[in-house]
Structure formats: structure tokens, C-alpha cells
Amino acid sequence: MSTAMVPADMSEAQAMVEAGLRFMAAIDMAGMPCEALAELLLGMERNDAIGAAVRGGAMAAFDAQDGSVTFGQRTMKAWAVNTSRVTRGQAAEHVAVQRLAESHRLLLGGLAEGDALTKSVAVKLAKWTAAIPEEYRDEAEEILVAAARAGADLRALAAICAEIRSRTAKPDPDDPDDRHLDRGVLLDTTIDGVGVIRGDLTAECAAMVQAVLDALSAPEAGGDLRTQPQRYHDALA
Image (cartoon, rainbow, N blue to C red; front, side, top):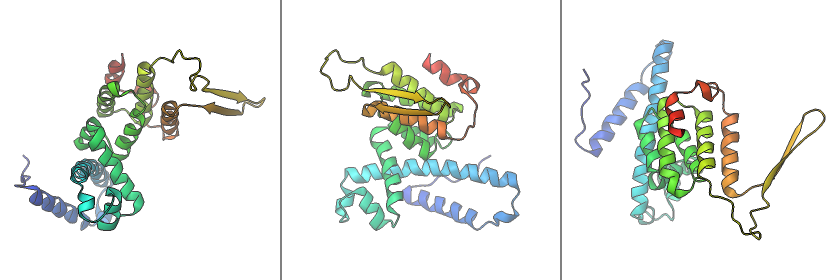
């Protein structure tokens, strides 16, 4: 039976979180067995995901009240750098999670679960789904979170996102003068099979190509799509 205390307010909750982290930081990690260390590391990833969701929501609310201006800073990124003393790169990552709270509530919810999405995956999915028409975006993100919850890795999530994009893409315009109609991709191969790819893509198409390339460059973890959980295959049917 869990004996964890329920905090009375935000200040007490934060104090409890800090106390727990300080306790773990003081442990002699070198004396722990590998299994316990693996459990600790996976637990920290869950904590990081939940913490990122908390930070993103707080930053969105703070920014909505012009908090950075109140404290003499022009932007949230500047406030984070100059007040919380993080690097500009870390501040940019914080702002990316803030955007989840502002425009991708379903992804933020998946992040807050702790074991569905990591911060880096949630941010990447937000970038990928930006290429999906707005009227389908919530449904797409719901499918992606469900797939991640069922065990889909980054490669599989990219494939799902690309499939959703292809099914929801608007038809090409009939206007012969439309400047996008001459967009395309050309793949040339030499006698040795070496390939050179050239293309002129719209911003939306470029985002999806980048999504696929990012996924293909990730370490292979779960095999091809046929080995992935059936749940998200059914979602796309």
C-alpha cells in the first residue's frame, strides 16, 4: 500500500519533489545493482516528462499574463536565461514545451502521463503535426499519443504521422499559374548505385520529409511496423 503524502498546496508539492530528488542525489549509486539503477533511470525519465509538462503549462500561463514583461524581460526566453540562469539552448527547449501547452494540449497531456511521451518526442511530434491541416490535427495527435502509449517508437510514430498527412492533404489546386504546381523531387543514381536527390518542396512537404529522415536516422528499436502493437494500426484503418 502506498504511503505517499498528498500535498496541501503547490508550495508543499514542490518542497516534496525537491526533498525526494535530494534524497536520491545523496544515494551511493556505485553500490546499487544494475537492475535498481535501470529502474531509477527510467523513473527519472518519467519524472522529467511530467516536470516538463508542469513547466510548459506554467510558462504558458505566465506568458499569458505578460510575466516576462513584469519582470523586466521582453520574452519568455530572455526571462528564462536572465532569471533562472539557464543557457539560451535550454531556454529554447523550455519555450518549445510552452508551445505544447499553448497549441498542442493533447501532446502535453501525453507528456504529463510520464510513460507515454518523453519531452524530446513530444516536441518533435508537435513539429511534425504542424504540417497536418488544422481541422485534423487534434485527431492526429490523439492517434499519435495512443500509439506511443501502446509502445510505438519514434520510427513508427513518424510513419503514422506521414500516413495521416497523406490522407488529410488537400488536393492540388487547379490553377495552372499556381507557383507550387512545379514542385517535385528527382532521384538520380549513378552506375554504382550512388544516389543524388534534388527537390523543390513546399514547407509542409519539407516538414514531412524531415520527419521521415529524422525517424530513419534514429536507432532501430522495435523492428518494422509489422512488429509494432496492433492498436495504432487499427487507429489508421
